[in-house]
Image (tube, rainbow, N blue to C red; front, side, top):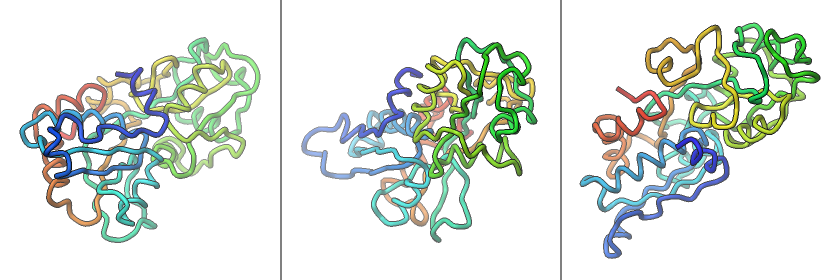
Length: 270
């Protein structure tokens, strides 16, 4: 699963009328865009739904681009559903409904050769804020030289969540390298011994995941509520979900098979 999630770092067009007979394919297509964090989960949930009795006449088209893109697209009527890994903003268009479908753990990632095993809250703020610029100032690190900070672009819900959960009032270092997806951060950190970034739990292959405030960033700690770096994942609609979208979201939040899908690498809604 995690290897497949890496491929989702690029824009995805998936599940176009999957597993439906030709005569039924034109009936209902749910179009989706947005968060690269939410996309791997939504892809699995869409696959599970079209195989179910409830979803036999439903197809999906899924594109990525970031949470802000998904929110904008659904607000403008370009898609049926937006994917968001951030909470609603005051600047969001009115009338949008954010339906939580799971929670995700946001992890601090370094190159596998780096010896740092735990980041305190202050060290995260120092490193990502730019007041600490050399690895010899980071406890446990065996990397040497300048710290290459890798973050998401401004349109990213993951960037918004990272700032709120980890950074507080500390501003992100202006010299940080910006990437458009979880997968691109994952790839950069995996090949750069001096890099540090943050990724969702589904994008941890090939990188080293450090503890945060002494707690491992893993599924067990996220599900128990011990890990302090979790955030909700949303499907966004223009107004209260209706028709096929409402049925799908209800299936995601209540169906045992859907909850089992989410439990693989996320914290299920229930």
